[in-house]
Length: 384
Figure (cartoon, rainbow, N blue to C red):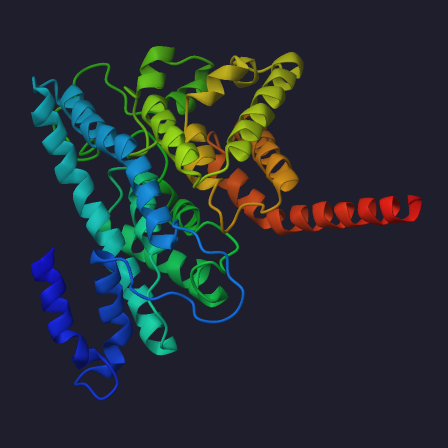
């Protein structure tokens, strides 16, 4: 690291005022802050100083995502070899999955960071670390068979429309990663749904063993009311699905890391689970078709609810900010997931739309919470 520090100090004057490349100052600053903690702090105004800056927050989220990502890579290889009927060991499965997933990650980062750097140069601002997480979330919530050019278009759409038009990092009103998935879902539905998109190479495979299905458990539940996968398969992640959403166990490990580091709100997670369970109980009691009779708690481990409530709904920028608002916000998302997933047969998943709806409602929720607090304080003041 000393050699890198020495090299950066040597070339740094070229990117300052009076140097050869002053217009690339923000670009150089982004690479410098990637390797080292910035050596400057705020110099005026009232600020709360904390060791958890944006870089550390983003690093904590990435570490929390790694268990689900690494398992997802292995699971991609696992289902590919199940599809072909070939025998393969753990590392063979993992490296096949790595070969399929890594290009998606690269395309996501390259296309998204291109726009991030471009807008930073135009605005003469520093490049924020916010996209470090978004660039990893997008590959984890798309099917492994999604074409790379679609990933690039969706990522650039999310950065441009989801972030930059609102002013950049910290100003967006919806989660950019979910916006990328929503763009893909509505622009290219055949590449985001169906049985052939969740297994690498299934659409082009010449040999598929008899009885193999690439359908997700939720799709099977929506159609038949039952699935070929057991609850333990769903909990550990031995099911088809989006790259990072299959293993509830790995997602729970990530949740513990986020709560322990204080990066994500446990109130949103708990209230989201409570909203889903209570709505599921009501649907089980009142519903009549096969999907409404799926035991309510199965929805916790089938589909992308666990990943969404842990990593998406808790986004500190787009979630509710008040403590009471976090309970309401999470509960609302849990309710909406079941309403979209079960009541509306067109969307057997529902998590994406529920969280985007929660993002839109979050400012309004905070507004009513703040106004209620103001009214209570006025009443206490009048009583005294």
